[in-house]
Length: 156
View (cartoon, rainbow, N blue to C red):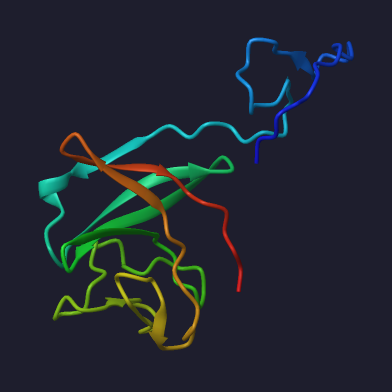
C-alpha cells in the first residue's frame, strides 16, 4: 500500500534511494528496489475465439521461470488459472488443451482425475478436494483477452 510522505528527506547518497519530488500526493517520496516490477500485458486470444466450454493455453513468466496458464469460458464468463494441479504440480491437460469434462461442466486433471469448478477453481472431488486452482488476472478489452498478471499465491 502506498502512503503519503509528510516531508521529503534528503538523498542518502547510497545510490538505492532517489528523491522524487514530482510524485503526486499519496505516493512515496522514495522509490526503492523492493517495489514489484510492472507486468507486461500478454494478449491471449480474440474474445470470440474463446467459446463456451473451451479453453486456450498461454505462457507467461513468474520469477524468471516459464509458466503456463489457461483461459476458458463457462456459463458465458471468462476464467483463467495456472495450468497446475493442486495435488501434484503437473499440468491438468496432457498438452492437448483439454481441460473440460465431456459435458463441459467441470475441469478435470487428466493425471489424477481431480474435479474442479470452472467458475471458482475449487476442487470438489479427488485427491486435492478443498484446494483451489491459482487464479490468474485477465481483462477483456479491444476485442481481445489479455493476461495482466498473476497475483501472489496463497498456500492452503
